[in-house]
Image (cartoon, rainbow, N blue to C red):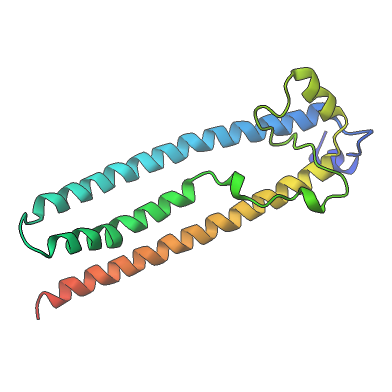
Length: 178
């Protein structure tokens, strides 16, 4: 069955429970794989940050009143943007707004099944058979769209912090000559 056919015939009486569950399984698999990718990216970023912190620590003089200010400035200017980019990768589905209040009928949330929501296979099967797929797809689309916008905002925040960091580093290097 094509997605258009499934959506056009998706009423509580005619929803194809097998297709609903296939969509749910596919979404769960994609998200599980995305955590692998995120973990690899964050791991590389972590190793990079450790190298930068290690080099800074090795070159830092051990005496002087300015050291605490230098350390704080370093962490704010160099490491904060790395943390902000990492924040984009953090799963934020739980921070998306509760959308159930605006629905005529409460979504069953079978496209994104949370552990513990359904206790048995039979319970999930029965709910999937009675699910309004259009309602479920609308709910998930709004939820994911909100998450996409939050991630975009976080990414832009990270880019701005990185730009400020580079500007401060550039200025400090230029002022060394004066």
